[in-house]
Length: 615
Image 1 (cartoon, rainbow, N blue to C red):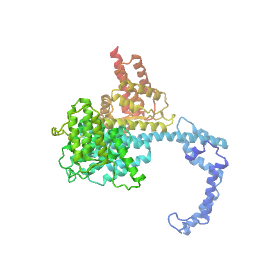
Image 2 (image 1 turned 120 degrees about the vertical axis):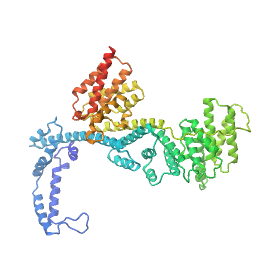
Image 3 (image 1 turned 60 degrees about the horizontal axis):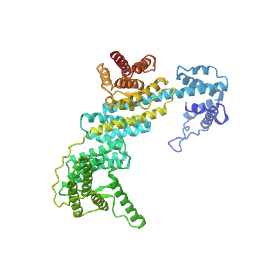
Image 4 (image 1 turned 45 degrees about the horizontal axis):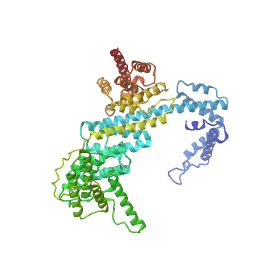
């Protein structure tokens, strides 16, 4: 098929690309090698396959037959042994085989070959779409039924990337939905946390984590790797997920009680404070800063520095400080030819906790009108610790100057020499996963939209019509954005009904990972199929749980029209679309799409009942 497609723009019998002549010449060359016994072993040097007399006898017989091959014989053999079988695999609506009944001239042969090449190319697109759909179903079944581990997740990502870019993106989306589904019911399990990190971290970092046992130090290291990725990337839903995962690893580091737990306590708290600050949760950030500030003994800390390269976007002043010290380092090493003696883009852990605590108080003072005396008292405490600290970096000096300058530009303040002790912070014992669940669902939809765009790029219009916003419309409906969902669904219905469909594009695989995005009515339909005894984990029943893009779009369109109290005329038009689809769409797998057919019936019933009740 490949060479036939390449021949399509050109003539079959041209001198520069005469496939028949080339093949016959190669056969004659092989005959000459067999006659002269020039058949060296591919793997063993100085070994001729024709050395044995038994082989030599049959080699001469084969050489005699190959020598007698002519171009006319080869064409006849090729047509009978290959071309007619290819024609039988073409779509039945095209009578390609009739073109092969008369190939008496080169022109007729060229026409027949071109027709077979075109039809086999179209058939391969249908097979490709069916293969892609089957792979999606397999991925969903494996993740939903068997779940995954860090090792299997790495293997999935590696192999799917080799097969098709869209499959690796789809796998990530299903993983996000799988973790979101489980985490909605229970806390984020350690194994699910590791699986999420596997999809976000480079593979080398993940493999390093696989070889290590869980501990407080390892959890801190995993959080650091994620924070480094966050600091390097622009803000997106995936980055927000990575921030939540970093928090989860830091919580896990603090939860472990081992020989390293005391040494990483302050550093883990400071990083947690920075992450909460960057997500706008200033009260939580204050709590974790206070935990470090209340610690009386920092001698157990294995690291007294906060790495600037791991900090997420906090504020412009911190970025300016890091930029200045980086420039300072460059001047010393490059312009002044001084060797670098230490890493300067670091902060003293305790002093940075004081600084971040002041910044949190400043923000909450603006929001909650806290007294200036409270802010002054903490500034005084920060100043005392700054003067008493035995290890100060240039970054700490610049941060301290920024705080003092900020205080001086506020209204006149009372100088305090006495102040109350810090209150015991109310630290949460575990991560609030509600935000993570929402981010996972949102990012999954973004990944699924990317899959749709890749599908639309690869599918030709005469095979199937693929819309790219069906998942976006579903998520808009879930979020209560009915006007947007209606707009997207109407465009999708219009495109899909007018499009040519041989094989439908699957909108949803109704497994638990996707059911969480649907409403209760679709969930009930899935339940009915399960009650009927159809096991969705069985590959033989996989089509029973599929919903096509067209049926899903019609259902969402109907639901939004009823919620928005659309006109009876619009609903009547939607009903016409539903009836047309149920009556006329005749793709080959329709009889197996049980859930899809039930959804169309439910949509029709909803419209009829709504019109009846309104009248």
